[in-house]
Image (cartoon, rainbow, N blue to C red):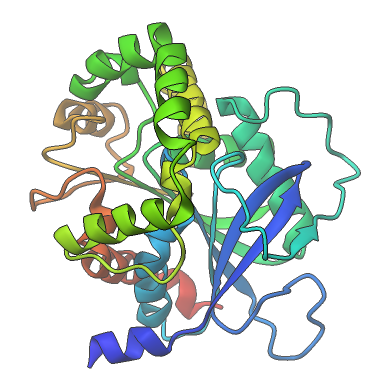
Length: 325
């Protein structure tokens, strides 16, 4: 029954130019243009999901649909790709984003700080100013969520959920110790290998490989995942990862303290990107905060298999906030 319900949930795919860069936005629910919707049925709140890295938003659709269903379809759930992590198909119409009059030129949009500004530009140009926001950041999306709270106090963010957050000491984690030399020292070798190995492949071969891989993992996705075999997107993901290793070092305690009442942190017990000791440090430094530990052994990429459980949990955490809207 649940699977039948989720299949009926509308998900609208858009490719827009945000800050001059192709960006994929997946919108769960019937509302596709909140900015120009003047009807009495326009929702008062948007649930906004910021992905991890790679920022392939199609991976998050099952989670978004499950969350939309869990909040009784009252509020839209949108997922945005990272800048440079999605290329529109040739037959897909590209929408031009409105310019933010307060925006400055983003010189390094594919880097970590550029990705923060990219999300801010989208929110400022596609979401009504008075609309309430729930921001959900997974992995490096948690870091971006904190930066949004810090840089954009004008946004009406009522809650921010950081799921398996990578917000400190990334290069010191078990995965970080492996990724740092690969991404920081041998990144250009990866670029060349990716280009020469993947660029010549016909589209049909790429589609077949992705389809076979998904079948082996018992996964099914309704939107194209071809970008995971696109050298341009993979190069940008690697570049973003290299900056994460260098820049995500010291936890931003000031921003956390200022917005602690709005924040929920959710750590994993077997997460090699943010180990259990990071959870323990957070609990020690912010004993009054809403800082939780997953009791089950759920991997960092929980989106692939545990989306229903995570959606139900987030909806339960939001129950009190949504009852007031």
